[in-house]
Length: 207
Image (cartoon, rainbow, N blue to C red; front, side, top):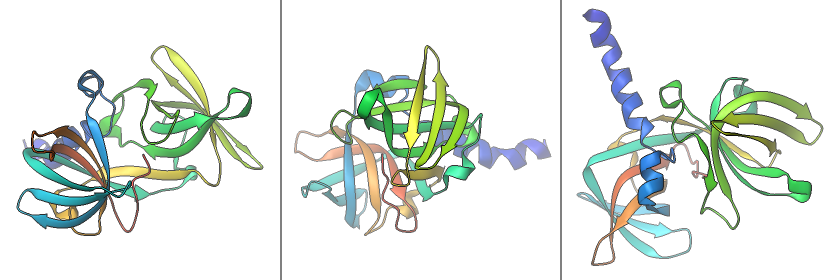
């Protein structure tokens, strides 16, 4: 019993993280919109956000809000067997150039596995997969990643942002914080947000 009690907080944190920015099957079916921007103020459950495109947006956090932190990490932390997500854009000769790579905690292994179109920039793709091989080169590295039904070679350069998910909470949602929120529209033009990822220590979530 004592072991279960000790492990319970970790299990809860893991279950909360599984729903965040994972591209899960549910997320794919409902195709939620995403708001990326900076929190300007907080009033109760309402967040005033300036989007990256310059729009003023109001987000209403829901009672079942899930929050994940985003922190910097390094490419050296990505090993064979790591479960990662990568936003890529087409490069010369069919290359998949990584704009960003994010490392999932073990509790999120398998979340949103697969490759799909993404909306962070034109022609971008999000791929969640397991690293099968890493190869270092003079101008960066390549990661061979495998997912159910497919494989992709991802090119990582010094310009690629490399981050990791960590547990977060409502206290992270404060003025100045950079966020990515999954939202649903309200009739008044504001949004409900049940899942938010927030940068820590000045990090802008790159996905």
